[in-house]
Image (cartoon, rainbow, N blue to C red; front, side, top):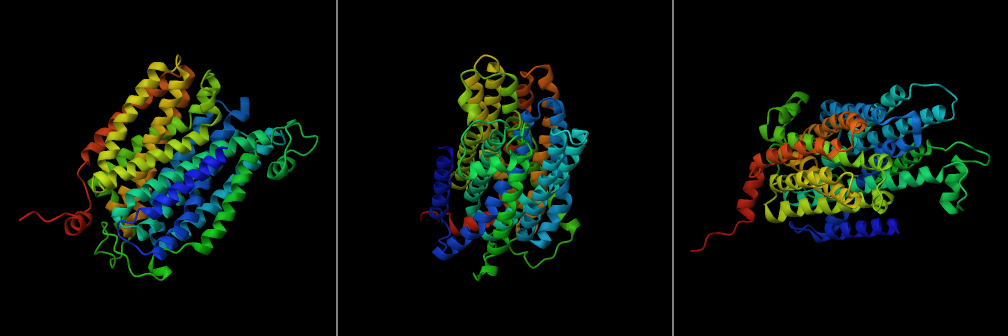
Length: 488
């Protein structure tokens, strides 16, 4: 049933993509662009499965991994991810998004195999390892390769989508993230359940193949390591499709040059050094404000997605079991709604300004975190719904800031660098909350939403500061092509 719902969501997203055509592209351009972004986007979605599978497997480790230890491992990975963009962003701007996504897929696949092997060795007691150190290193390396993913998809997007189309692509970007979260949490949990030792459930088809592969007859240990091996295999399949189908630019696919009217408009002939690219971020006050919004959104985003299932495991959510049982699917649906709401509001009502919806969504997240804090131990269903609404809003903010605003203000030439460093700030924030919530949950889970609230407030204030901002080339395009002349 859940797979049917996700398939329906995907169909709707594709339909919206083909329907939204403000620049009146021809049908073959739209189709070829779809052939480009779909495998690229699905690779990115399955990178998420290979990123959050650690959170899914956490409860299966039992006493081998406490909340605090998990927080340390996850924080190590997120901080590696964040700092990697100082190198990987400029690199992808030079080598292109196609090569970047291939590096991401192959590298993450190998690191997931490594984490699976470590899990197998420790769980089966074949080797005594310090699990925190071993997984911190391998998960950190996994996140290094993962960091190529977002910048690569946005780099290719910047070449194929005009600024006035990017709000909707930001929604598509948020949808791809939501699919990835669904794959990670629901497919990942299904793999965990499927590979439990002594399961009496009848299996058929692919389920039987996976069960027999990881849990042969006579096995008495749960095959938790399958949560790492399966995403590794899936990623390699998509890497092959990426190498075959992706074209870096419309010109590479045989179309005329497309001026996207972002910050690189009129500057495409210029060559930038790594320092020039970094100055595009650190020397631009608007980019720093966008990065500030994303740092706060990282606290909210992983502050919910990473911890809700662990919270529900520690504090049984009586009456809200449906949320826990369908966590991945609900994250997917709410993430898609939030992503499209942000993108459509930006493009349709604010002339592709990204600040207004980000500010509105931040205020909404503050209210929902307050609701969680007031009802954390008394109203499980309300806590679950408020958590999901925060996920919807923060997906909208993230897709607008990292997926869209960074490319708008950075321009095609510096898209990977700008979006990468902005996205890196998401994971700096995520690392902060991972350590903090891991510690605070040991005191009382009530501190969890209270900790999130000031970050929602700060994010809203920063987003308000960029309420009226647009790249100069975008503003000129709107003035010349969309504003109606005054009467008389």
